[in-house]
Amino acid sequence: MFTGIITDVGRVRAIQHADDGRLEIETAFDTGDIAIGASVACSGCCLTVIEKGAGWLAFEASGETRRLTTLGTWHEGTTVNLERALKAGDELGGHIVSGHVDGMAELVARETEGESLKLTFRAPDALAPFIAAKGSVTLDGVSLTVNTALARDFTVNIIPHTQEQTTLGGLAVGGAVNLEIDMLARYVARLMQTNGEAP
Figure 1 (cartoon, helix red, strand yellow):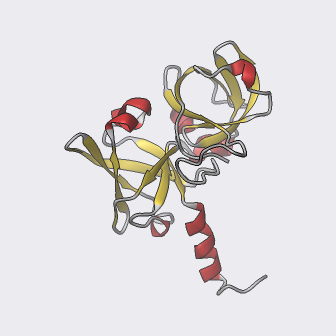
Figure 2 (figure 1 turned 60 degrees about the vertical axis):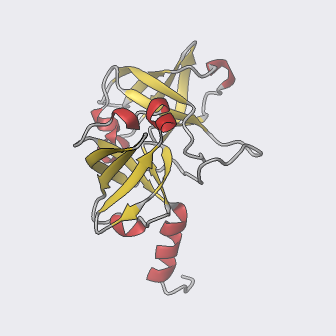
């Protein structure tokens, strides 16, 4: 589990998209403090550490993960939002994030509002109903509050700190992000689908 509060922006130093989908990411984390088998959210994708060295971590990503997330487009030099797994007793500064990406959203507009940046994203048809104004959403691993939600488009505002400390500040129109809908929305929808009846 994660909180959606990014603590480092890493950089892909090696990647292969065939076979086991191995990738290595440079990080400012103290990798000596990260166990093999630990979970790390990489731009919202929960990945397992399989190898490490001073200043880098290695992961494997399945073909499905590469197909359903932006990971399939990563290359050497791609910047990646990183968050270590939540520990019991840690401050929950964002919201509960599983690291299980539901799909990808496209940035369709960006405009400056004072010192903030207003970003408009377009969600896939199947995921749009789960996004509500004033609810939570995770974009490339970043916990954000939804400002407005229309049929498929929704907006978020990025404060200067988030612009500087995550990859979202440099995202160009047409770019894709990993989208995880709020966990509560997922379960409410399932309850409504089954009319609250147990299987």
